[in-house]
Length: 402
Image 1 (tube, helix red, strand yellow):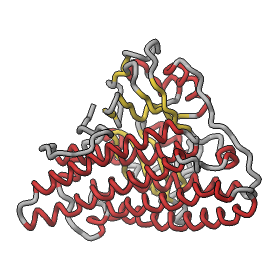
Image 2 (image 1 turned 180 degrees about the vertical axis):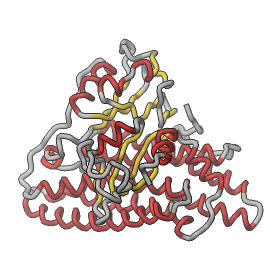
Image 3 (image 1 turned 45 degrees about the vertical axis):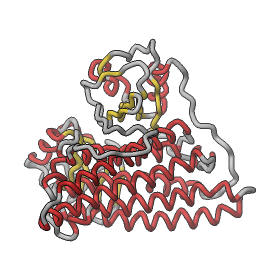
Image 4 (image 1 turned 90 degrees about the vertical axis):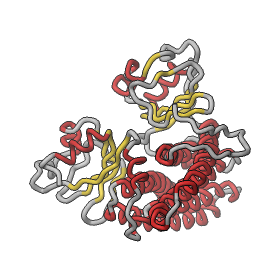
């Protein structure tokens, strides 16, 4: 368990000589989880998930304050200050991401959640995220995730685990599940439903659906799902660009920020039109708050890359902190001579277990987010991959990939 005295009830933060690298690892992992969790709370109209977001936001408040204190103690020379300036930028950006995610969660808690018709129109293939407290008599209690082998057996992943005020943000096969833990489960809803019952001893409840007479729901749903995907990807790519001192990745973050601006305008315009079709236009306020918070997350992700775009050398503590997190995000390009050209994505994934393709950037500037295994690869596609360090390094070393 990583813990930095991040008790949400703590009102003061005292200086402790915690390694900046360890703090940045915790902030990176928290940033990535909190964005996913906040959108999931909104899309599922889940107060429980929204409360977990606020727990993480309180944790981030403590982490960023401890990081700033330790940074002030570290810079003793002008050159050190110059190299550490981007680190302060990353700390500030991570805090902004956390605050914006908290704003999304508050949309749910303040009863400004998405209209039921929009939730009902979400694609059936879209994965859900559920909060599952471990019952004392659960057959998972006292076992490791490796021993349970949940993902292989059910297709459901444990993306995080909370034990009281401590978090495991990147659980692995050695992580032990104890009674009273809170698991965050992700997967297809039918699969999550079964696992949830095994974990908690109670039935999984889908979010209630409330009918609204609104037209062109598909456009709104597509926009919201895109905003979620772009926000998550922006944060992933921003940290990856810092790790590899990769200006091309930083430019991808900039391109995604422009995409979010367009999506924000599209959702705001749809909301204004839809206001004339509902009895209580105030019920659509949550959509406007969502649009604004998404834009803030995207802007903060771009701030993480500022040192790269300004050609300031990456401080070793930044690279080490991102490298020591368990998950790597990399960018590779499909070589026309690779044999994967015009093949389904499954061909590449079968050849490289431990890899997930989270996005494809087509040569014509089209983005395909979270593609399925039947998606056909094209020459010069840019793949954004996520996986273990070993698996991603193996893919990059493959002569068929450039």
